[in-house]
Length: 137
Image (cartoon, rainbow, N blue to C red; front, top):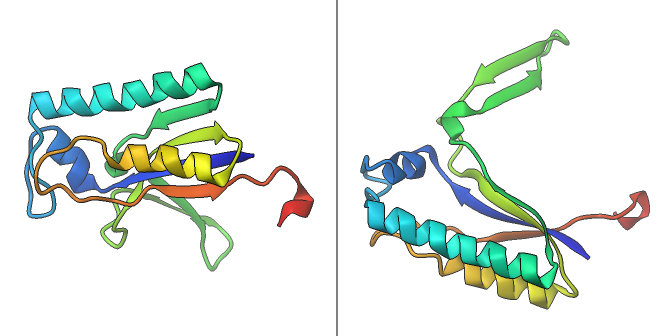
């Protein structure tokens, strides 16, 4: 079965990775960033070797987000981010093909152990099965 595995973050987290601390997120050092990239790279390499990785990407910061909604008048309402009402957004994802929910849960648990600075928010890793056909709902 295919699964979408998502990691979350906020605009403050992206800024912290650039060295700008806030009340919500401690600043990352260059060594901490490199450790995080190496850890995630190792996960990607392992998933590629097992054949479970279909796709995986980090996403641009929320400040580069655009929201397109339908207004009451039927015309598109376009808003550029970040959105103060949004707490967390998807920061990255993997599309995996795994033999079981237990296997994808093992992978998500590994992702939760990614190194980060002391005091950084521990976001849950979200697993969503991907429906293969219209009858799967």
